[in-house]
Image (cartoon, rainbow, N blue to C red):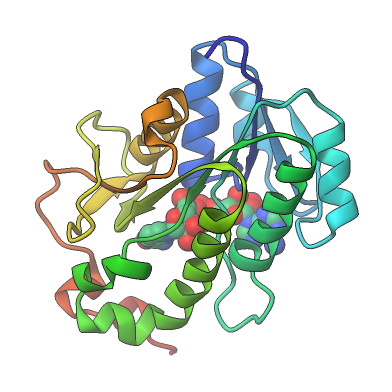
Length: 227
Ligand SMILES: NC(=O)c1ccc[n+]([C@@H]2O[C@H](COP(=O)([O-])OP(=O)(O)OC[C@H]3O[C@@H](n4cnc5c(N)ncnc54)[C@H](OP(=O)(O)O)[C@@H]3O)[C@@H](O)[C@H]2O)c1
């Protein structure tokens, strides 16, 4: 993949940052599209260049694509709960359109276990608390899979900020639920990009060595309650 230049949306923290750092560490050119308010220090520390974007503005996103010779895109955007316009739905769709228009065919998107067919993998409490979030991400998933793009979807379950363990795996079994460290899921995202066999596929990202369940999966919604 040495001739690639990867453009990441949602690369300032968590999984997207993990992917950016994985690429930078092995010498693959990578640029992260950030917003005005983003904390870019972790990217600066890792030597990863940034470009400003408004993911809701098609012209802004198109300009970013036009500004580099990109070969692949990673979308690892989150959304704000309770806010109608979501970066991981509307923003992701703007990015997919711009990728297609710029002939950047390879797109990997990080969503969540619980979308689409994987609804069976999550506990009722997950649907009760995150149902709207999962529905929004599912719209983006369906848009990507219907697009004329070389698409891969990677779905984590629970995520931690612990350091990479190196033991996380991806599986095409959409009944699997689990937890993984964001740094490891970032590494798995890059592995998917590297592997053309993942095109058209949907994978769950879990770490079999992490034995505890995500709070909502075990019915604990205390972190999601309004005080
Ligand atoms: N939290 C979980 O346990 C969990 C579980 C399963 C799946 N997921 C999903 O997995 C993916 C990665 O999650 P994560 O926790 O690793 O990510 P994260 O650390 O929350 O990072 C989210 C990224 O999205 C960017 N972003 C959000 N809104 C934006 C906007 N309006 N415009 C531009 N950028 C925006 C953030 O940029 P800024 O720095 O500018 O804010 C950040 O780079 C997300 O899709 C998430 O929903 C999360």
